[in-house]
Length: 86
Image 1: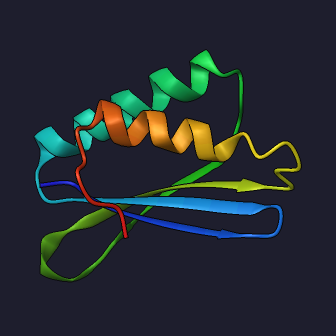
Image 2 (image 1 turned 90 degrees about the horizontal axis):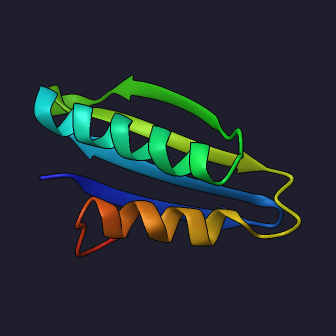
């Protein structure tokens, strides 16, 4: 199961997507690539390992004056069929 966490402050937004399996990792990577490409945007993207063998894919927007990130993140969450986002 892919877990999502959203954080936003003034001109900064971040979506963290945690996954367990290589299949989930591929789904997340494909989704993020497709949606960010469609919106012609270049967020900061990185991955990090956490406990219990999980890995987290992080998408960050800095200086997001137009507040584009919210719509982009919502599209990603829907595409990945994530029901709850903390």
